[in-house]
Every structure is written in structure tokens, then in C-alpha cells.
Amino acid sequence: MFVSALFAFQNIGDVTVRFLIFEWVFPQGVWEVVLFSSGAAVMWFFSLFSVFEVRSKMKKELKAKDEKIETLEKEKKAILDTLAHGASAPQENAAQAAGRSESETTD
Image 1 (cartoon, rainbow, N blue to C red):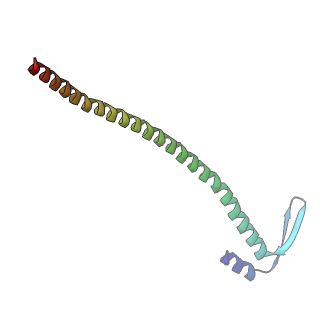
Image 2 (tube, one colour; image 1 turned 90 degrees about the vertical axis):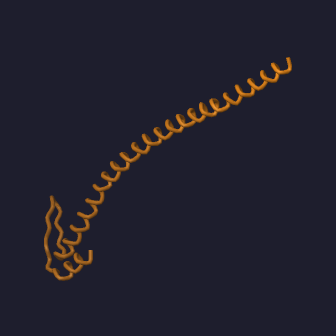
Image 3 (tube, one colour; image 1 turned 30 degrees about the vertical axis):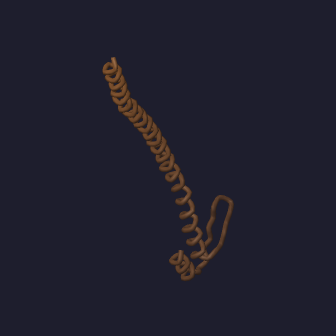
């Protein structure tokens, strides 16, 4: 912006611009600054579409990863439950066996 303002200050000759039925007369530098600023604004506007596209893609990836995490957590819980039941079963079997041994010795 500083360079375009410097350009406008150095080019103060009047320029007539005609567009359709309109006609404007301003210094050349002012027109250059207006065109530069308009171009920057238009490019920024179009870059927003790119940002929304990337954001949408990232949201989809995040959703897929969240679903995968949820699935893995369910699998982990199922495995831990299986291990917990499997570990308690030998203890119960040992207790039952000890109970049988005592009853056999008392008979």
C-alpha cells in the first residue's frame, strides 16, 4: 500500500475513465490506488472460497478420526472386560477347588 501511495503521489496527471455511460476524471495515481485496492479485495474474497473448502475437508477428516477413536475405545473396553472376566474366572475356579478340597478332607 505504501508503494502504491508513493506512485499516486508521483503521478498526479489527470486521467479520464469511461465505463458504460459513466465518465470520471481523477489523477492517474488515484486510479492506480483504487485499482490496486479493488484487486486486493477481489483476490481476498476469492481466497475465502479456498479457506472454506479446506475447512470442510478438515471437518470431514476430523469426523472420521473421531468415529475411529470411538470404535477403538469400544474395542478396548470390550478387551478389558474380557480380560477382567477371564482373570476373575481362574480365581473363582481356584476358590471352588479349594472348597472341594476342604469338603473332601472333612469327609
